[in-house]
Image 1: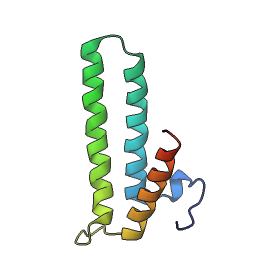
Image 2 (image 1 turned 180 degrees about the vertical axis):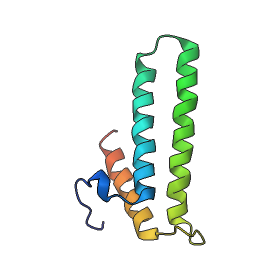
Image 3 (image 1 turned 90 degrees about the horizontal axis):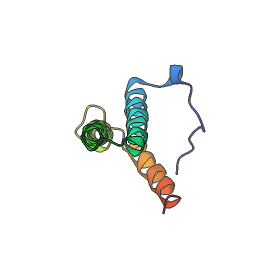
Length: 92
């Protein structure tokens, strides 16, 4: 896997990674709210919001891996995939 810094200052992020980071963070916040929500309708509404954020983040990520995209960056897409796989191994 290519070398990546442990943390990147928000001011030094390019617009696309900054937006993906924002979407992922907001999704995590909403998923945390779902766990504590008692009202079934409110949980469903929050679930719809988190799924919408997931679709947006995945679409942006998809642009990185699509060779005909003006934002194509397959090395970055590959690195994201490997990072997510490694993070997922710790969850199981």
